[in-house]
Image (cartoon, rainbow, N blue to C red; front, side, top):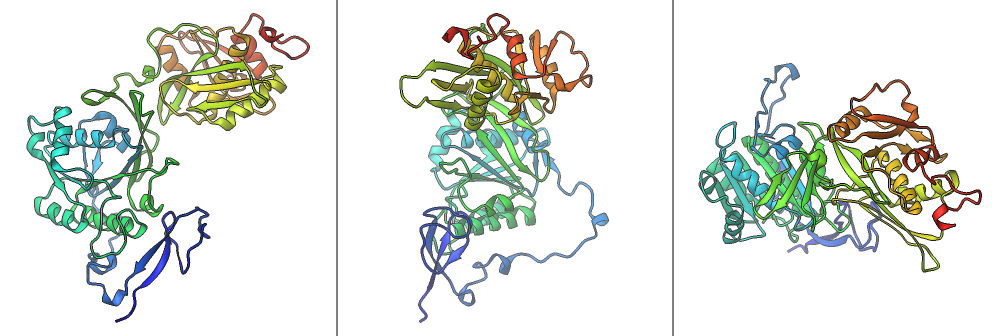
Length: 479
């Protein structure tokens, strides 16, 4: 009997090698090679290879394909449907990722229950879980008040991790949607390797793709994330599925943001906003003001800015704290913001605006648990730093938006008019914007536009009193 062969397979890129190495030569990941037994293909039964049991298909002319071959079903959870492009496409495979405890299972169980009385007709759902028992799923459903009505019978729970068994049950019961929680616990019995390994995750996904495409059943896969925030498993997983959506937010904050990083059937420019309450995730009625406090008071180090999440403007509060350091090396901390942009703006303020922060600790935060990486947040962050350094507040009715260059110049950003109109709708009076927009931007009703060409000019507008440094370049409050 031939001795089984083994290879060392990278859990990140799926490349295999004859011997173990500390760093994967292909992708550079450390400690990612795991020894895996490789079976002889000639000894594998018909379930051992995805290609062996994939149904054959005939080529069809592009013009001959009937329109509407991929109908959508709306779940009734408007924010969830919005991110998917208008609802779930039958026959699609969607990957949902997020940090542990962020609410992935809660959201999908609520969507499953809502689908049983969907606006497009009642849909049966098969919820296959490899992480919980049926009793645990029922407890969560009871907490979410989902046991009554059609959802009590329309959502079928299957405690199973074997993909072949899940597919068999789905083909027998013919649900409209199959939820697999999670793909890292799903296994293919004919393959060697532990659950969550590269081979198991890839083959399990391919089997579930066969189920979706061949039987016209929508499939949602729940994916774990690594400590770096990326979905665990090979990158191939994200390439195979039709859509990748992630649920983000601070675990101990109430607000959650659902966004798509890939969507073959819709735009990736949409986001959904939810609030975690005792009875589950609740859609936010007015997402634009969701990240603002009801009572806004002017305070040093606080500036409001309209950021653009996809096609949806959201107003956020940028906070900064500047304090003389007690140590040799000043501390720099950013939460919800790019720390590299923070360091860049500190340098620009010192060089172009005369606000030297080299001997000060600097802390920056985006209130509400949202993370923003777009350059439009540069100007409000710079103004928040200047406001904290001066210990003078920017008026609470003022917003700021714009990118800051290394020369201290202000640059326009995409979707400026849409952001400003949303700010005007929410009652803001003044907007500090880059002068580079010129005459391309017309007047905004109810909003006074203050144009600045440089960061120094923007500070003069936002902090008119004592805004200019003394000749030595040291802020007046620090002199």
